[in-house]
Image (cartoon, rainbow, N blue to C red; front, side):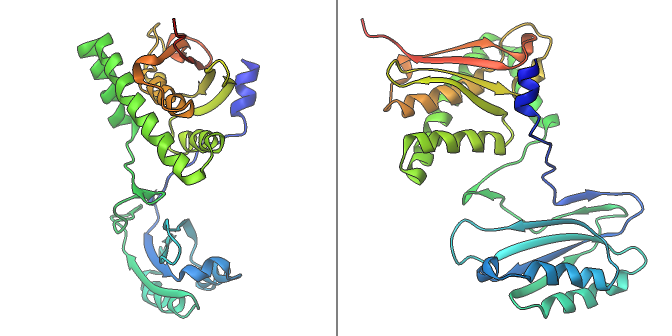
Length: 280
């Protein structure tokens, strides 16, 4: 257990944001567009923040979006509390608009007292491709109801879907990096970035085409803690699909994937053995 804590200790929860719920505030959402060149100009952020400071307006949240592609317009979203000074919103827009590199400034009033939501950002993207954020209250039914209604056949379906997801993801990341080991490292980081879990490669033996990986904090398996069985079918498929491509495009039927540990049955982490069938 100490090893698990050590591996996860450097990670902290990250609130995705663009939403504020703080009672007793009047959170306004300010939308700024900046020239792409501002990424290399020192002091732009300082001047933006100073505009709020001069008017004694506290910033509740600040997000920056850098589109995938050189030359695209940057977007900054700032949620600030204008309690007792809502008349300053227009003045603040004027002040921000005078800052070099700032192209446009607009704002939305609170949805209602204490609540603000970014209502102008759509679609969401990562690496230039559309992404969807799904809260646990929603995705839990995707997994739990399927297992309840269909049983182990649902696990087999999740594995099949996961395998194709993993295969396609590895191909995409290989096109970005041009190197299979770098593509695997990118896979690991993005796996964590999107919230699936923290992936640790325990063993990768390219000669034997055999790998052991651990997933700490699996979003899939944590739903089934106490169930007593393995439940990591989707993520097992994703990892198996990765290695199918990593080892040169191995066919689905030639890959063996076994979940040897699972937090759903009380283990401290989920662990998977992935290997290519030995030719007879």
